Amino acid sequence: MSTLSALRTAGPDTDRTLRRRRIRQKWGHPWLYLPLFGCLLLMVAPFLWMLSGSFKPEADIRKVPPVLIPGSPTLANYRELFSSLDFTTMFANSVIVALAVTAGNLLFCSMLGYALAKLDFRGRRAVFSLVIGTLMVPGLVTFVPLYVLVSNMQLTGSLLGLILPFLAAPFGVFLMRQFISTLPDELIDAARVDGCRELAIYWKIILPLTRPALATLGIITFLGSWNNFLWPLVVAQNESQYTLPVGLALASSGQDFTRFGVLLAGAVVVLLPVMIVFLLFQRQFVAGIATTGLK
Amino acid sequence: MSTKTLPGRDAHEPRTARPERGAGRRRLVLRSTARGRQTRAAWILAAPFLALFLAFMLVPVVWSLLMSLTDTQSVDLRTPLNVSFTGFDNYVRLFEDEQFVHALRNTAVFVLVGLPLTLATGLAAAVALNSGIGRFRAVFRVGFYLPVITSVVAVAVVWKTLLEPQAGLVNTVLGWFGIDGPAWLADTRFALPVMIVMAVWRNLGTVMIIMLAGLQSVPRSLMEAAELDGAGAWQRFWRVTFPLLRPALLLTAVTTGIGYLQFFDEPFVMTDGGPLDSTLSATMYAYNQFGNGNYNVASAAGYVVFVLIIALTVLQFRVLRDKD
Image (tube, rainbow over all chains, first blue to last red; front, side):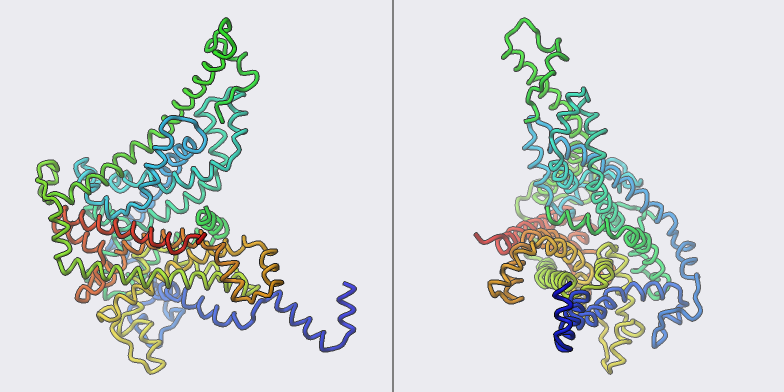
């Protein structure tokens, strides 16, 4: 403080440098904002175009120059989407499949992750290497035999065929094991002394402490399932099992492509729920993703 | 470690350790039962995952390899064992098929151009947000990350309308500057580059978020020391910051690369592999073969991509790992 006032009395010149420095500290490089806002506009432009177009009558979408706020907003595109394409069923399918896949991964991956991180058993190393060794296996390698398997199990006609192959993903085991390894051993030993049974330790002690990692895995798994395309495309046989991406992709490749409004409304239905959840929880979301990258 | 005998435990377990035996023996029995209990618990906890993993991962991985060495067709669906072994015929056929070679070339371009661009733009965005600006950081972060969470199918549909030659926003904006935009997705010169731009747009946020976390963990004292030693901003970044970011960058590069090598949703929605196969990807080729009932060829193509994934990963470890 005293140096500050001393500097201030030194003259108008230092006063200006000081103010500049303070601005620098608060704002960084002021000239960077303009290009960054330009980039931001480019990044979100497709979403603005989508949202605005989905509420426009067909003729207005093609109007030049385009307007952001629709002059005569309409819900016709959405009405069309849900009446002629049965997006209600597809939406429900997407939700059911994503929830089931997420629940399965949270449970099964945390169970195995705990065993691999904290329990002393024979075969532990072998199991770990086997599971981690398949981290890089692309879905492309397994989809043909999976199709043969699932269709021989008579599951191609049901949602189970969309859920079962994704219930246990190696990535989840990796994430869970890494996180649970950081929990102190003393906790578990203390529980054993108190007579807590092994499975109860997992359920009552480990699982509650693993909540941050479970949240991250849950987000990643849910998004992966919601956005998954190749497998549902291969396995879903008729419209009653389509998920949203399958329904939207097939609609866009058919005769309907000329109708932008309906397609854009379809994209909104696929994207908006995820975006809203992301915007609400973006802090936790981003923190979770960032930590998975650092481990 | 976790099997150590705990004080006071002996008193609780008179049945497993008979008191008339020596102390050493008692400890041994105790240890083995504690371990036995852990082993049993571990396998119970592992069983559900491993059962699913065996059925839906290990078996298909091996099966797919075997299938790629046979003449399996869709007619063999109900009798998958009733096929004959053909050695590497499918692989030879694949590489003799010009369409597959073309698809591999497209995939290679997509990865070799798209991946470095994604990493560079993501890193640049992270540095700009971390040390370039002081305000609105959260706004930029959310905006740049937003495309990451989206479904490729949905954004491909949106981009397809954006790029529509007559009414699309892109050509309208270009028209304001007197530029007559091409029919992007119907032009062999532009279709694949457009998909690369879309992939960069969609994925740079992942790199940015992970790099931001890395940048924030660089100790301030280290930067100050480098500054005192007379290192300029550019030098400080490449000599001090970048080496610290490298492990995280490597991980993102590997996972993004694995995704890029399998790109499929974009051409499926936007071009169906056209025009003239200029956007046909390896995955799309495999999917088409599968659709034609050639399960053996589809599996072989899958394995070729798998080998490429391994090669790319090894290459990235070579290039990006610590050099000491």
